Length: 383
Ligand code: GDP
Ligand code: MG
Image: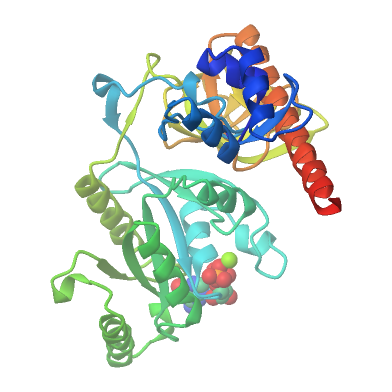
């Protein structure tokens, strides 16, 4: 931990509290009591005087990690193939929303104000030829995703980089490219708006220009022996959209994406969105990454928990269960969970309450230590 009270330190090390207080006082600490808070550096200093090694791997208990011990260890026997989780990135107006819209077969674009995607979530499609499922996340720039990324959780497997055949590579295309590279996502390129060229020669030339620009930016496309597939499409006419979907399936097979599935694995997931509804109370969309969600299960998230009352898929239909890479809407939360927060299954409500209390207490302690720190600093500057 970054802060430890003297009594906690005594508990952790089995060094008698009276001895700790005596020795700390000898070392120059003043007014040491059992509640005295020590920063990590001081703890290390004190412990080194006892030849006591602070092990680096002792996991730091933070509000983010306090539930980690609830997770079940990976059991290879439960690993099963799962759908890929895909986001679409690219320059503004190159057609991200139109592709999602085509895939979702509903009119998100027309409902939007100023073309900004309002709704956060995910949906699954079944591919037309291979009959496989793909999960699309629809707003990777949203706070939930930023929060997840900050914590190093990359839930996206594949990025579709959208490049308009009319514009070719633009500043945000390069941004997206950089992001995909940094986060280690695999990539498929969709050259879009090819319906804008009625003349086949002009169309070929436009597609060729995008290809050359990609090569100049060292995108390892298949043509130069790389593994990035390039699919010219029109999200307006639907031309080659099947091909795009099948390219993703192909790539996901190469990636061999798996997740622990079934009742034996402890459920894990992330909150994509969260909302208080007049009719149903607290509702959240959860993207499942492990295990199996069923009604009656108890989930913990942040300072709240949920006894799952209902599960609905993205079409608003009640479902009995949900599995990895699926996003579903659930009800039953005591308080609203935060977007981007991790969800973990617990045995029962009593366990949930116990762990929530533990987390709340930890946050309180951290706050107090910060205050103590500030007070100590103020006192030091006064002297
Ligand atoms: P986003 O900013 O990347 O989400 O781009 P949008 O999906 O909102 O698309 C921007 C504009 O391009 C809209 O007017 C779309 O109708 C249009 N558009 C998108 N894809 C295509 C396409 O394949 N063909 C044509 N002709 N227009 C498209
Ligand atoms: Mg858009």
